[in-house]
Amino acid sequence: MDYSKSVIPSHLLGDRGSNLVVINPGSANVRIGLAHQDAPFSIPHCIARRTTGANESPRRNVQDQMLNSQVTTAQHVEREKAYDIIASLLKIPFLDEEVVNNSYPRKTGRVDVLSQQSNKKESAFTWTDVSQQITDLPLHDTSELPEGEKPESSERRCREFVCGEDAMKISPTEPYCLRRPIRRGHLNISQHYSMQQVLEDIESIWDWILIEKLHIPHSERNMYSCLIVVPETFDNREIKEILSIVLRDLRFSSAVVHQEGLAAVFGNGLSTACVVNIGAQVSSVICVEDGVALPHTQITLRFGGEDVSRCLLWTQRHHQTWPPIRTDPLAKPIDLLMLNRLKESYCQIYEGEVEAVGVVHSYEDGLPPGSHKTRLTALNVAPMGLFYPTLLVPDVYPPPPRSWFKDYEDMLEDTWHVDFPRRNDVTEGLYPGMNNNNNPLQMWDNYPYMSNQQKKEDNIGLAEAISKSILSTGRIDLQRKLFCSMQLIGGVALTTGLISAVEERVLHAIPSNEAIDTVEVLQSRTNPSFVAWRGGAILGVIDYIRDAWIHREDWIQNGIHVGGVRKYKDSYYLQAQPMCYINS
Image (cartoon, rainbow, N blue to C red; front, side):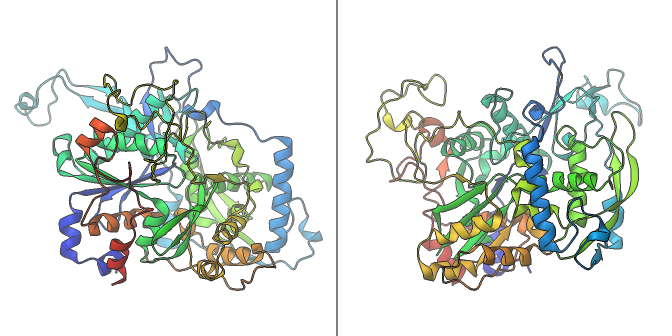
């Protein structure tokens, strides 16, 4: 039974959830759905726009191609060292060790794929048809034509843009460029991808999903509210820009923001937990006590499931099990789809040599996909890279440059008592043509303010990050409780054997002078890949008062939450009412 249905009466879920859209944006996927749905739509968070060719020199199939870097010699050496450390733990041969010289007795396991799933897992992706039927005649004119006859003015033209998985399956020969508006947990702003383009792409993707998947046209948006579950990695300005997209551009009547970690706790019906979110491109750790997220415990790690997929490719190539085909997950998004599926199907964590026979596909420009039956080996190594990130070499796909982001003002703290000096290097406000000189409350983007919310991006493994985050709470009673209340979320959390590996590695990562001898990962009551979305839906449905919600008119006119003690309230301060309801 769905957890949310067990704590929320069905009539309440139906009534209050039918006009509440919950959006949980991520670097690789965006999860969107109505709060009363059992599960959200999970759509690849990307868009391919048609290029004219005139302004493209050279023409790029992927917007971020210019940012990707090659593995350096030093990184390669560190990767090989990490492999051998992992090999020792898993009792498998070292990277370049001959089997005959292996000091460990051979222990081989085979990964079996369920028969009902094998067809799907071995079927090839097909290239997207980017054309669409265009007719110049009004709809009532075309209906008068004989059945089966097309109007003479009808023709097929290339779509201006394609969203979601179809965007990732466009042939490189087509005149399209794929864009990911969020990368490594931040808006993907760079010298090749302007802020305006990023924001327009987010709006286009979300608007397409609202119309095509949720069937909510523009004319009805004012009847809906929106709850945004934002990643812990988002800066304050990023949150403000997302709010502007939702309220100003997508035209929702009201909106509220909740942090992903706290939403995940609510999604599993907990009050205290260490939330470990392993996303596609970023992993984060944050502790929650009695329904309140503790900002100083947050740690961000710049690697995730897509890095594991790329590492799977590297291990197969090193062991010469990969067929001689041109597989490039950074330049050919369809290859990344294939590698993600192989990872989800075959990667597991347990001791011994893990092998499987799978089907690898080649996607050459303009040609039908080719199939190659392949023996895959060392399938337990790549996911162990979460604990030894030098194996993953995440710097090959670096985070966006951070020069654009300034924490002018903390949306999570009360800043009314601070006397801010005026900035000379920023514009008058977010909206052109507005004169904010007479109302300082409207100038929220014009003040410098360094947040005390820590955005740590440590180059450490997952186990060390968990231990460091929990120990930073400073209280032994809370530490013991958190070490026994670890919650894994994100698609990677479904990896077989990961829970045991996390428990074992975290126990080893705790310093010997700490009085902690027990760790436990709690079983998730909701699918880990969308538990934060589900928690957002619960928070939105049981939030009767809605004093933290921002109305469209207020945001457009003032850019702030009018009438509140704080300029903006978010889930760090939403404690008693929702948690009391869940625990009652």
